[in-house]
Length: 454
Image (tube, rainbow, N blue to C red; front, top):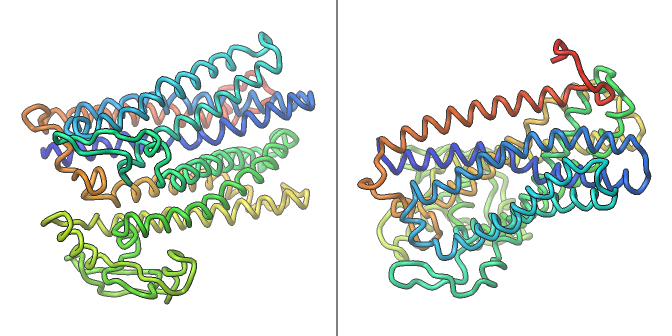
């Protein structure tokens, strides 16, 4: 019944539910806008049909993302009131801009686009979907700017026990955002690419409207390939930034207990129960230094050395995050990322050979590969947030200082809302997945599919 543990668990559950839908919204909004642009420029009715078909799936996914995101923001004031008191002057600004500018723009023009078919001119209707796509990704930018302050605080001063903003421009150009935002953006691209690839492959394997889904497969293969390659490249830059600004997170991701120069990359590391000693490891010499500095030399600090530094800098305490969770989250993210790049490039190879249905094995694998970006997105966020522990705002405020006082929010009340949110969101997710699956399996040339088809 510990309020801190339950509050962390509740926020984790809400975040995972929310971020399950966000990347598909980011990437699919752009892809649908691209499809409608092709229709606008060519007048080919097939592209209009693509826009309507994938746009319907986009709308279903978008609705769930909104529901989970709203409750997530309320938790800052309910479960994390000390955090809100300490950093609300800074954290609230980008969130307010996100809601009042990006989200309102996104939701307004999504309604215009949905109800505007055959009511607006083609040019205005096209502008509406592009505004939705731009606003969706601007929304992500402002939310990530708020999160970037938690990762790398800038543009503030400490006054009367609170962090107060002194430089909005510094906040809006936080060095952390230049790697974090592109990584999330291209994660959305690859998520949408694999979603369309998987659905198209499912239909092609069953010879269901092959002309329609062959065209979608071709576009999605290129889209997913761009996204997967860019995620890897930007992720490399993000890791280098992490080595400089959050070295403990990188040390935990590599289970690197002692500083090394040059540093080796872990294929498998097993530590002892104390979390401070390596028992067994298989490592590739010098590779971690190459990833960190683009050269085969360069020190990467280890967990024990960083712990000693942080004790001197911040006072007594345990400054290591949960190492096993970070270590395996990092490998889940990277492994899924490289597997997606491989599958996307294989799909693109068959597209370039004009032989999309040439590999029955690929068509059977790709529907299951829809899960890969969700695995990568979830493990990536777990690493990003858990790897910052014990800080909620790096170097300024610890997690146990941010929770609401027990006299205000008891463990019992957090437990009750945790159970209710988990059950409610679980039910909503089940409904959303059912609707996505149902409408993804419909032949777009058949307006009303028989119930037995589902």
